[in-house]
Amino acid sequence: IQLMTWMLNSVNSCSKQVILHNKTAYDMWKTLEQMYGRRHDMLRTYQISSQIFKLEQGSMSVTNYFATLKGLWDEFDYYRMENWSSTDDHQRYLKLLEKDRIIKFLDGLTAEFENLKGQILGLDPTPSLEQVYYKILSEEGRKRTMNNKGISTGGPPIGETSVFIGSANKFRP
Image 1 (tube, rainbow, N blue to C red):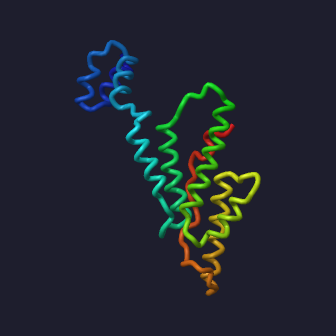
Image 2: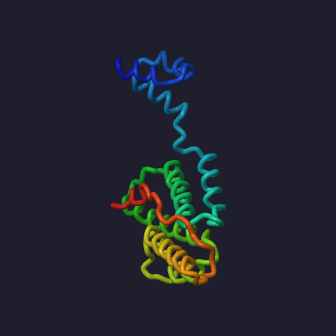
Image 3: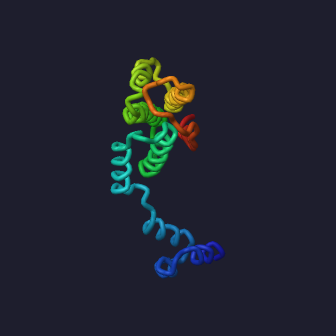
């Protein structure tokens, strides 16, 4: 009863009217989940995927570009979360997903990173997404330092150098 009371007090009046006549807290929860649970929302998945596809660094720092991608990927993962029957298949999927994300990250960078992108893509084994980000971030810092010393590096001075990476390793064993 306490849980049901809490649920009723936690929702807006329209939702309250819908769940008021449920007999158990579980039934209330299931009704709310059906109303608001958008875990497999194809429209939102499409919107996020489209944003990821179109995103480029442009005038953003590497940090801002990566943080924006990371936020979109985290949201995309939420909507695409599946229950895997095979741990091995899930691990293979995660490795492929990480390679796709490395390619997207590198592809969206400005032309000033072309040489480093080529070097990274030639590495075997493929570094992790976080390692790739760090290599690019280090290059951005090197270019900024050289610009501050008056040495031309072919690019404008760069700003930020940190990023909140969040749950980047949440799927790793």
